Image (tube, rainbow, N blue to C red; front, side, top):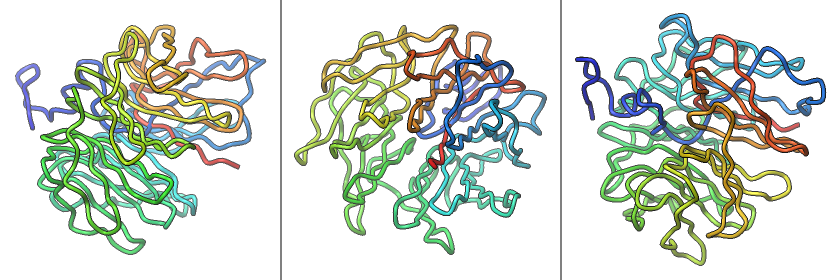
Length: 341
C-alpha cells in the first residue's frame, strides 16, 4: 500500500514513520550513548538495538550493542533500507527483519558477520520477527503473503492470513501457540497446532502493533482505534479499553517483578498495568514516541526518538524512569532485544 510524500511514492508504513509514529511491529529498537550517570549501571545482561543511523543510506540498517557502560555501533547491514524488528534466538543468533527497497528481507548474524539476507517470497516488508521455544523463526509483514516460517534449514513460501493486509507483531503464548497482529478485516490471528485460524475483529480496533503473553497466560494486544488495548483470556477476547492520553500502543514488556508495561505515543508514552482497565500513564522527557521496550533482571529499557527526531532510550530502575539518553549517530530506534545471563 503506497502513498505520496513530497511528490514521491512511499510504502504506507514508512509514510507513517515519516509523520512521527510507528506502524511497524512490534517487536524491537533502542539505543543511547554519550554520558551515563555514575549512579546508573546496566546489569550483566546483553542488550542489542536496531534502527536507522544517520549519515546516509549506507547506515540505514544499523545495530547497536551495550558494552562497557555505553551503547556503540555493533554492526551495519549492507543493502538494507530499514530494520523494523530484532530478535536473538536460543543459540545467540541475531535475526533482523526489514526491507531492501520493496523486498521484505530477513538477515542473520553468525560467526561475526551478517548474512546476505533472504528475500521472503511474496513479501514487501518484514515488520515483526519471533524466535519460539522450538527453535523456529517467524516473520510477519506485508505483501501477497503475511507470515513466513524458518524451520532451521529454510524459509517457507509464506502464508496468506484470512482478512489480513499486513502483520506488524508476533508473540508466542505459554502453550506454544503463535499469535499475529496487524490490520485488515481482522486484526489478530492465532496458529493453533498446524493451522492459522480465521482471525478476530477486535472491538473498536483499526490496527494491532503489539502483542505479548504475560506470566499469567493472558495475551495482550495493543494498537490504535477507538480503543488501544485488548486482552485474551478464558478462551475469548475482551472488548478492550482506552488508555489515558494514548494515541496508540507499540510494544509490551513484563519485568522480573511481573509488572506489565505498554509503550507508544500520545501525551503519555509509557503505561504501567494496575488492573486490566486501570493503567498508570507516564510521559517521557523530550519524547515523540516509544517503539520498543525490553526488561532484564533489574532494569527496563524503552527506545524511540526524541523531539529532535534522534534515537533515544529511557531506563527504569529502582529510582524510576530516567530523562533519557541520546544515541550517537542514531536517527531512530525501532527495536530492542536482550540476552539474559
